[in-house]
Image (tube, rainbow over all chains, first blue to last red; front, side, top):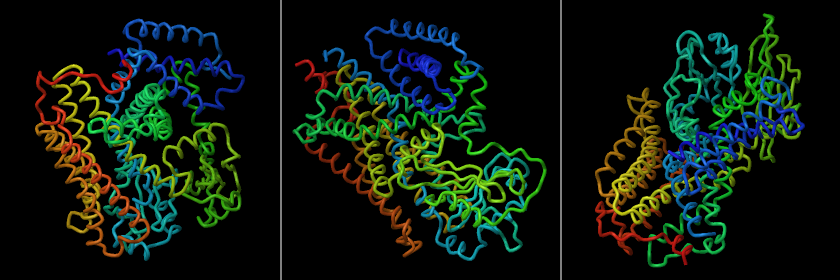
Length: 85
Length: 532
């Protein structure tokens, strides 16, 4: 259950973190989509390990959920969604 | 590292490995054979069909006939300029609607009408077994099997990361620790560690590239939903297309012969060797021809020369002349398929694929034994051990049966069923062996299967020699037959080691089907070392 949730919740977080990197890097995001894809897969793997590793079950899962919320709010401050680079 | 932290890493490594191990075994075993996909295509063609292709129409006539008879082929087709040239197109109307059809030069009757002939599809089946566990697509917008393998690759990558953390501090010691120390269980554990450590770069490549290709659709959907919005779809199409889609104005144009297009591509990019040609809008003035191939000497070797119908060069995509997206994606493909370094790299990938399959079996077996040792007798451990053995032997023997059917059935009255039978026999063997393994003693089951499996792989080249004589020794056939003999030898070596273990060490209670309460619990070697 814990690993399943970690696996599930890590995907949106890794995607949004990569989105934040795309917003921060002064290069059009369209030009390095494949590298973003590779970055998302690596981040996803790493997050699964980090969340599934601690002894206690719920704190890392709650942290993951909170991080998802924070990353989503941070993304709203960028012009990426439906916008340009 | 503290003992309890190390233990959590070990537990997580074991859990991730167990969750992904069986799917990865199938992917690696089929993937090892799939390294020689092109050669396997030649091997599966019966001698009689190859001989007929010598007298068949040439590629140009084939192209003309297909585009005359099938208007759908004019929208988009792939031309494969091989010994027996082929044209592939997507049929969206009439018979075969919603499917990719393939016409070979030998598929036309005397009146010039296309008649689909039964052909072995073994190479495609092995390929599908590798990347989607041969799970049918079912017409869904997302390829379920491929996406599933993408998710498995994520778990696999996470397992690799934990494995690296566990073994990094004692890498040098373990690297030379593959030796028999009286306890044969230690031997298998050493072997698991050694294979994992030696092939770590290979596995890192496989996990990242496998995840990138398998989970591409899923990640793109989430990226589009959360980050970039609906614009992402158009951007992906734009960034991965060699040229924009055809915007037809209804103006017709006479196509020049294929040889001239190939010649024009060679002028634009002399070092490219051609693999296939894609034509969009055949006979349309707005159409284009993409001559695709490889530029040797690069890891990301894929190249395209896009021409207009009058052979004018529209675009050249090659190493040093392409966008960052193409520059990044090309190595992802070639690093995964091992087609960038000639035969030596291909054989290396084949060996690593087989070793990878052994890594996952040994990992699963160690997990079951370790769980039984630590938590006492457990139906779960016994079930997982039996499932692992049943599925792994099922796939190994099932694939051998597919090879036997592929070579044997075309010479029987049931030749028309060859493509279906290749898949069906593999599925039936897997199901039967899994059911059998759940009932039988794992020790006896494994002993028997390790005798049958090498014999099955030995039988395939022998069958070809009996049916086709010296044809079995021709270039690609010789390579595939040699590869099958290598698989047979590898299985025989595993059989020898298995028997040695049974002879020298008392088998774990799980293997004889009697897990008793009296069986002692103990820590693993790694845990003991960490505690001390």
